[in-house]
Image 1 (cartoon, rainbow, N blue to C red):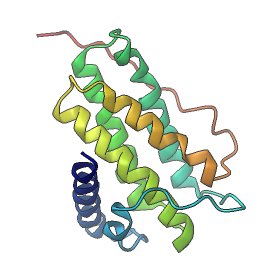
Image 2: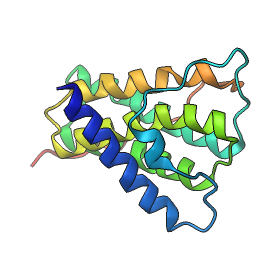
Image 3: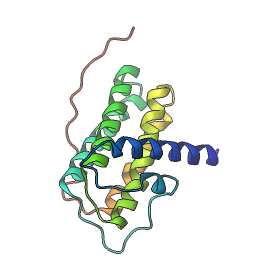
Length: 165
């Protein structure tokens, strides 16, 4: 099971690296190199995130928080897929726009690759509600590595009702 997760994380990282290379603004190098590793060991001092990282993490955090309703069966599968798409979009935004030094970048990749992998897994199979906990676990590492004022206040998520088919 662990090797399946490693392969999935590597594949996710490779896909993100290829997508990021298409963006001329992207300053991250070697996404795939970080994909197979867990979050880097915590630094003695937390790093200050740039504005795109703060914005992207708040967007992802808000979407994952909203998925708590899905875990309690208070949200439809289409809405959960929409929230997982918001997580993917936030991660893609961060890869394309944030500019970090090598060490914080490596720590960030250890957070974003599992986050993206879990979001993609939920979209592929909305019955895998356990992926929400995986997303929450990935995001939980962010304040361990980054000193982001206001982190405990995620961006609001617009709730749109979907009719079940």
